[in-house]
Image (cartoon, rainbow over all chains, first blue to last red; front, side, top):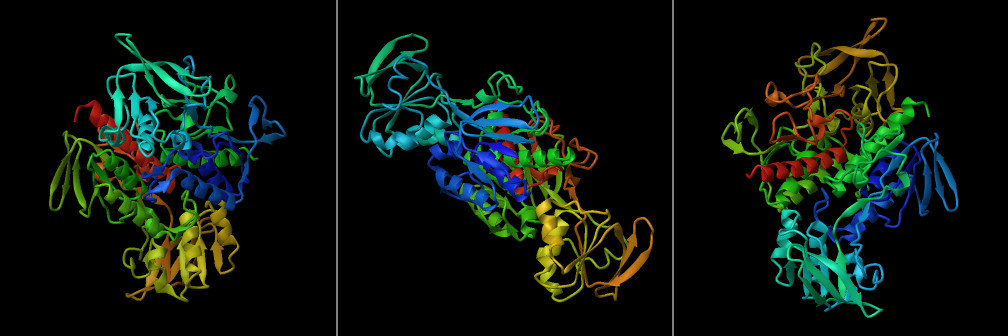
Amino acid sequence: MIIIGTGPAGLTAGLYAARAELHPIIFEGNLPGGQLMTTTYVDNWPGTAHILGPDLMKNMREQVQSFGAEIKRQTIEKVDLTQHPFKIVTKREEFLTHSLIIASGTSHKKLTIPGEQEYWNKGVSTCAVCDGAFYKNKRVLVVGGGDSAMEDASFMTNFTDDITIVHILDKLTASVPMQQRVLKNHHIKIIYESTVSEIKGNGLHVTDVTITHTKTKAEQTLPFDAVFVAIGLKPNTELFKGQLELNNHGYIIHKQYTETSIPGVFAAGDVADSRYRQAITAAGSGCMAALDAERYLKTNGY
Amino acid sequence: MIIIGTGPAGLTAGLYAARAELHPIIFEGNLPGGQLMTTTYVDNWPGTAHILGPDLMKNMREQVQSFGAEIKRQTIEKVDLTQHPFKIVTKREEFLTHSLIIASGTSHKKLTIPGEQEYWNKGVSTCAVCDGAFYKNKRVLVVGGGDSAMEDASFMTNFTDDITIVHILDKLTASVPMQQRVLKNHHIKIIYESTVSEIKGNGLHVTDVTITHTKTKAEQTLPFDAVFVAIGLKPNTELFKGQLELNNHGYIIHKQYTETSIPGVFAAGDVADSRYRQAITAAGSGCMAALDAERYLKTNGY
């Protein structure tokens, strides 16, 4: 059994597969541990009152490895699901597997505006937790109105009193507790019904951002040192395009249980879930995928 | 919002509902904490390498209460889902709620054979973890071939060297790691293709058990002091019969997501899942039910 992804879904699948003595190999992407690695404290992991996201993932990882799962730090370059066993190709090696669990998660969407690419990692970031500390007492802009935008803005109050949120709609879309954390904080300003249209800099670093009102089209250019982009997620399904059935937004479609359109290929976690996207729902579906895959292997005599 | 059940599903639903400031009331059944209260160590709760089931549930409970969820120890006697808001009736009080999450779990099936009722709690039990210590160096019979039977038999090796499993089929149905724990242990004997047909005693306590071969119908009566019944589970859906759509085995049917046949009523955990039945899958679905219920309340303006 091969599992792609080391977020809560991939690791929980690995935990169940390892305990069933299926000796799974788990491939790690470019964000080992998944989205929880970019958060701070997690208060809604049942049974653990208050834990840093990266610590929770470290615990999960060690637990899975203790049962004999192997975690590989190799980027997968190609997946061939047209043959069985399926073929997984990395730069260095090829692997064949009778069952595959895809738990490759989602990545942050980009703004695709002038200046974004030029100033990427020079002021533009999708991870306040990773890069926030570089902007002590600086002017920070957060783009988005959902949970991750609220999380980023709240987190940045650790470093600076000058935080602005730009949101395309006239009200926030984040969950109630996340919204309240932001609305109560007088260091966070919100500009509604607006988008970021250009990021400007001095060649080395972001210096200004142009913000456009969605209705009036009025533009204002304001000085900012950092732009955290939190406008949503896209599923990491590039490797599977044309092979697996995906929905309009690129998410893997579950046929029944965690089964995909190809027998022997299962999907778990955010890569097949645009509705709930919680660590605990991902973990639950990782467990389901492992049990479904185990059943598939047994039923087909592998 | 009212939630029925304090297992992993009910408490995770409570955690998410409380954090969304929905002030949920969670009703506790006659097994507070659910099935995990009757297990020993749990090794497959992601992120927590090795923890006693009751400790895990205690942690979850405290976490949920810390966010303001109220847990009520009142037995629900009647539920009226024909009116909205729904009516929940206990011996002492009546409650009205716009949304209900059912996470009432499953209970152990009984053998329904002569002597079972007479010697219930006088040698007959469904909980080795609860009652095992009473049978130090005694002769113990475990009935069943699934995970819980294996768990009971393994657990009883802490107390006695004289353990017999009776299983109706010619091989065990438990998961691979659970089977191996039992098959490796030379203190556990297995009688295959047989059922328990009668439990006998001296009026005070179990003394003998009659075992019948399923094919030959040959009977043998053997001396035993304890009988642990682990032949499967039935969903706790008595309160909802005739009101909610249930499947042939009495499990609640999910229409879409965690929705049941009545809008505003959601189901999570084992009461709607005969396929996976894991703590982590129950917790995942509890989270989903809370998010679905939150969405329902908002959409309908409650």
